[in-house]
Amino acid sequence: MLLCPWVSYLIAEGLKLSGIVSILTNGIFLSYYATPNVSPAAKKVLKMGYETIAVSAETLVFIFLGIGLFAFNHPYEQMGIGLVLATVVNLNIARALNILIVTAVVNTTRTENKLGPKM
Image (cartoon, rainbow, N blue to C red; front, side, top):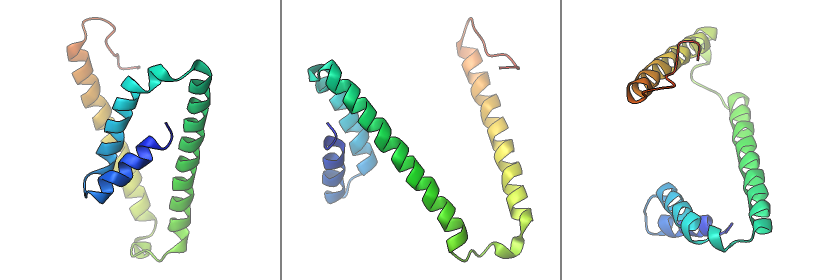
């Protein structure tokens, strides 16, 4: 169960196909065919193993991003704090627009339990 996604990724990369799509497709097939054949105790162990791997990988990504911020010379150093402020403002505007648009789409498809402004 732990090696199947990795093997499917390696095969896809060897055939010059998308490894991400291969892993997603593998996950769908494993959920249909492998999950019913695993005991409840093994499901708990697999869930804990997957969560541990996921948290570890996420931590490594953020460590590498943090190291990359200070370890390399960036061409944007001359722009100073203005670039950081512009980035934060643009991200907040993009998030607000995304939330408003998605909420409007969700509210048009719901008949009850619509999302209000406070939500």
